[in-house]
Image 1 (cartoon, helix red, strand yellow):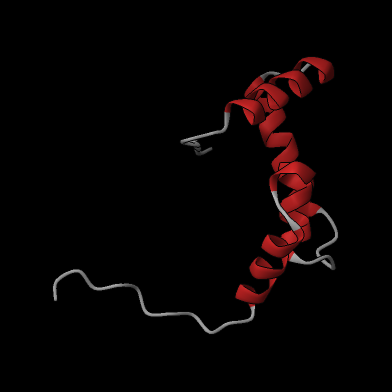
Image 2: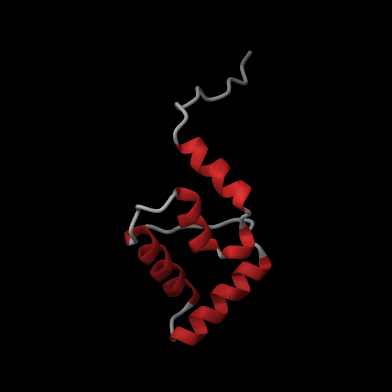
Length: 85
């Protein structure tokens, strides 16, 4: 099994995750894995922004941000930036 390191996690989000873990009787890692699995297996008929909002919580994204995320999904992939020029 692999490991995942999440950098720059908002303190409030970490506290919320810790509280959920405590309430469910799981460790912090077990709760994070549970939430990731639950959300990845969820019905994907909702927009990506709505799915992201459900994973992060309503206070994390505005309606405009959700619309922007959903719009980006339908744009063609861009070439990565070049730094050698």
